[in-house]
Image (cartoon, rainbow, N blue to C red; front, side, top):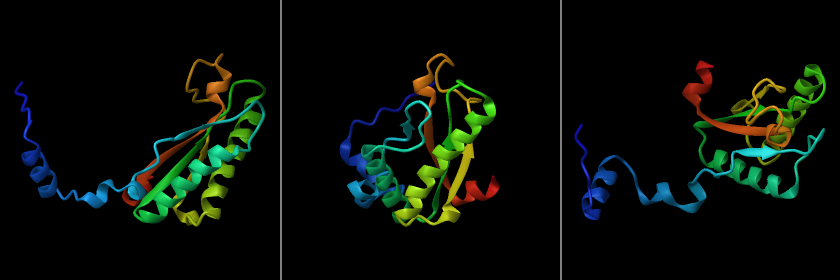
Length: 146
């Protein structure tokens, strides 16, 4: 295996420009927000003000990038019946979708999935970690294929 190490900043910058990167790619307003998971309290489906602020950042990113869609995955812990957990995970995912739409993201760019407790993030006993919504960004080509 051969490893090429580039320690020449000018050469790296020229390669980036040749690949189509510009300084506009790195402006603060165009970067995707880093937070992709939002956690909930027991039996809750509403978000706090900090979560809403992050979702507003996601909405701004989506409005700046019209070729990107988002899939919202709703989850719950394993406490209670699976029917109720799927219902609760749907409420959570729909609450996030509603905030994005209120911020101007078109409904056609939002895909919603709700999994109940079927896809835990942590062990089933770590209920707090499993009560969440996750965002997944998709290009429109990928979204149409789904």
